[in-house]
Image (cartoon, rainbow over all chains, first blue to last red):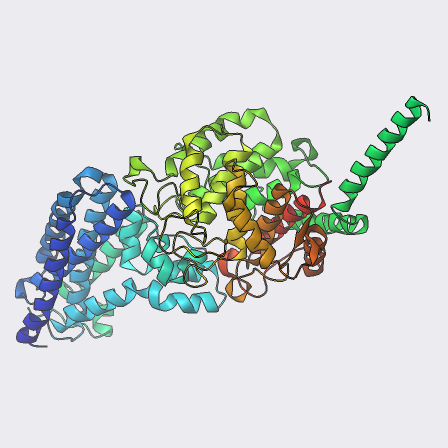
Amino acid sequence: MSNAVATSLALPLLLAGGATLAWAWGCGDIAAPGEARLLSLCIMFCWALLLLAAICDRAQARTLHYGVVAAMTGAAGCLVALWMPLRGAFDASLVHSACGLGVLTFAASGLARGTHALGFAWPTSWFTVLLAGVCCALAPLWLGPLLEKAVVANGVIDTVVAISPVSYLASLLEWDYLRGDWFYRHTPFGSLRYAYPDGVTSSVFYLAAGLSGHLSADHAGPFARLIGIRHPVAT
Amino acid sequence: MHPRQIGVALALSLFAFTHASADALMDDDLRSKAQRAADSGMHYLRGTQAEDGSWSQSVGVTALALRAFLESHRAYKEDDGPFITRPIQFILDHVNPDGSISETNQNRNYNTAVAMSALQATGDAKYADVIANAQKFLRGLQLDDGEGYAPDHKYYGGIGYGGDERPDLSNVYHALEALHNTHVDRNDPVWERALVFVSRSQNNSETNDMEWAGNDGGFAYMPGFSPHGGAVSYGGMTSAGLLSLLFAGVDKNDPRVQAAHEWIKSNYSVDNNPGAKDNQGLFYYYNVFAKAMAAYGEPEITDSQGVAHNWRNDLGAKLIGMQDADGSWVNSQSSRWWEGDKNLCTAWSLIALNHIAAK
């Protein structure tokens, strides 16, 4: 994928993110917790889009240092974005979820670099990770009907919930989003027994995934070479 | 006839009448069978109880099973052994600082509500503080001005799972049952607010100010939505709605109560959960239907064809017929709403039988 294509893909992301953010900020001071949490997720979603669009076609993104800076910037920016409309309902869970967005940004940057090291052109690797992230995020939607039809163990249902980054952010927000209004109406999860992933465990998992992506791109070991990662990855 | 003889005759007549009325609630033979089925169900639950006293690793299922034992015709007490004391301890081990009683951040309303009713059913005053804190927790879940929901909001007065702020009638009914069983003052504003939400969940435009309201008198899952399509009324929620109205002290002649009862009469069934797809929530329906009809206080239901049904006989025979050889019950048609869990279905069936076979 050329940088021109990346730029053309980044533009819709920027527009979608900016428009959602403008809408969210235009909602005024939200007092109802249910609405506040839904709004939080919307803001985090559009903030993630803006962040991804901003860095997907940048050569500097291909370093560990940039991944860390992007994560910290993402978390701080998200906090500001959340503060604007939610200052009336601000609590620790919003800080946790903003940090969670930073963790996800770090994981995405690491996985993108790892994917790049496997031979994917840059920024195709970015969009591959983005696509995988979206598929995982929507897993409760597209796997839910299957889980309902097939009687499966609770562990399988919990896994489907856990692979969604939205579940990770929702668990940090302390919000059972799958039983929230929209998801309850459009997925069968409200009628299933499930548990959300532990926030700390998930954070460690995403950080480890991101770090392994960065490290494997920078210092390919025997295992990395075995699966095709070149050393060192040219930037 | 001597006046004393007349008095004795009148007394005997009155005794015979009241005795006959009690017996008419359910056939004696069927009552005996129902009690044997309950014994068999409790035997099953004794076998599936975990070492820590729980069932299905859930406060909710454990509390329902415990309540089934405590309210059974055996009237088990804490003195009867660890199979009663251990589940109580399991429940107490999951009391949280905010007053909720739950092993998880989800389902806190359901878990807390059924745990309160189970602790209350022990009759032991030492749980009064736990119950009082749980009452405060449930009150705090109710959506009102404090949470930014104005009285004209469709969710005003509702209670949700406890983590999502999206209320529904099932959660409200469980909370109201717990508050009713633990004797919360009828003047507490929680009842009045709850009635706003309950009324807005009913398909009764005469008493429901929401535009979506139909006119069949039944209840949907929440204002304007039913999991069985649109905002259709169905058996489980209509019984839950009727029971909620009665818990809140609404008179039996109130148009909301009458409309709900009319729906139940028109859709009378113990073979399925009327209005629900694929018999989803069947045992939930049996449980709440038995409680609602017992609370309503009529021994018979006359359906739309004019046929009178003794609902206790019908539901008792149905449950006895559906019991598996091991003493358990399970929804073999749909596992939705956890009804693939034998412990849950068995507990619900036992509580239903307790209401059916009670003299």
